[in-house]
Image (cartoon, rainbow, N blue to C red):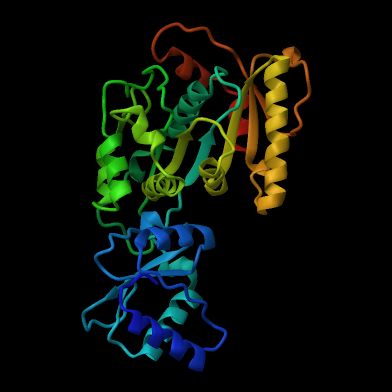
Length: 360
């Protein structure tokens, strides 16, 4: 719970202890940054906030419902409850929301898109090109004219767009193969995330644009300066990615590789992690060392990220000098540069191998 009224916090926790013993575990905050960081770690059922803190659903973990603690006398509803209701009424309302589950209470409030991360310890192996190719293939598979986002969707229907978005947080952009080289918009979005201000959903829609030659795929322009993305905290990166997950059916995230806290938290949120490698011994060795390190971190952190990894080798299977310690390995041909857009487009047209491994 994020609010400035300490007496209200004490009253609520006192009634919970007397009348609802063992049913609640509260964490009270007056600082929004500390509250969001704690929520990212604990994934609570409810995040209750007073107006004025600028908390948005996209800032919270998947499965956490944002509830406003209003100053008015309005009755409890799906998104707010008056702090002037009796403490027992408020607590019973909390319990009802939790018991109803995220199925009804969280519809349209929590991120629910599929997150696929492209990141590799083998620089120069074509990770960004495969990310783009994946987006072209995925959008072609998913896109249907009748699935476009509705302004007023029927009750209970998914409000997220079926489209695919490519969010590139690499400091050095890959070639403008999808037409994003001359457009901007990401820096303003990053600033909004840092300041926790503004309509994040609307700003995301303003910061993306249709990719060249790929119906249903949207891409972001580069930041104004590389340090705009470098300066983001792990929590801010999560907020940005969750905002995209709230808007798109599939989000492809292209990030520099490391096993730092920020990347590990993004890996935790991912549905699939794609690593690319050239078919040479030193590159495959780096992949194997990375997989081993990720497995050890999984055991320490109680996470399951190693199971999400798919390795895509650029080259022929016959050229692979060393076995990779993973059963999920695919092969994508090496394509020489033939002009802007050619590599990603041709990779996307490959009908077997890497794409099926990446999606499976």
